[in-house]
Image (tube, rainbow, N blue to C red):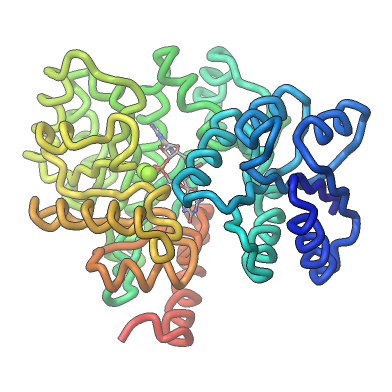
Length: 398
Ligand code: C2E
Ligand code: MG
Ligand code: MG
């Protein structure tokens, strides 16, 4: 791993060089400021990770981040600073908004364990790279893919925090692309929404999910099956009737279905969504407000729409046990869910600390890599006994 260190304090540089050496990392280039770093990159210097200070004379860390995005740098970034935690966080957000891959932030004086932890994220970051990069897909390609049945459903378990029991699965669509391999939904859902293909996509997913639900129920797994719907699906007034007919055809009870609603853009006319969501609830379909707290997934929606499940966005969940701000947001969301009589689900539960935090704070259901990564639907039956063993071994449930 080639590392570039930027700090105006000689002592800070020396300390980091020493700590990196302790981790076996010796390909380290120290420089005293952003301008020098950019000059190195411009001359063809290649680095895997840049560790940059924020408070520097001349070019400060924020200016450096801005300039770095234009330099063609394609490695990872770690921000290091003695500044207030919230400034550091904002700088991180800014870097991400510029499209930089931020591994994490470090507070000075840097603790060696934190340094190791942040750099360890690099393996994950590299593994997940193709997801946000790569080409965009056009509407014609996507239309053909839907027609040719190239969309495949994966599923991710949702489990009770109190008992560890499987309470349901969320269905997540992927595109098995003949040339590009498995393509993730962040690269084609918005294309579908913008080009009037989202109804066809949702219907294909829904049918696949219901077909599989029947098999799961027959095998004795009693649970909810959740499908994502976009607000753009809530334009056609016949949507509830479509859902009801498809469920009846597969002999699946509507009360075992959950629809997770996300709104990627602001809805102006709420008449159709109100009509559709009210009718779905009358038919006993559960409605979940997905990514709660972000974008338009807001308090106004909770006030107006008949949701009975609240999914706290993963950006608030991950690491909440170590961050007072996130913990406050999680607590407030859980409180709202409780007071409104809604089921609470935390997404993005990535480790045992996240799990213990949510359990202690009264969240009902957890979903995330700690429990299981999304998997092909047929893999669920093999995962379940493994998870049960895991629960007992780790003493996750009492
Ligand atoms: P979502 O509904 O919020 O789904 C959760 C996303 O978080 C999934 O990404 C899942 O793989 C990811 N995830 C789960 N656990 C963890 C974790 O512990 N850590 C992290 N970092 N991520 C985790 P995915 O499958 O890429 O889906 C992204 C989004 O695409 C979904 O977000 C959903 O909004 C949308 N989507 C997926 N399938 C469909 C679909 O059939 N229809 C529509 N309209 N949207 C869909
Ligand atoms: Mg969802
Ligand atoms: Mg979500």
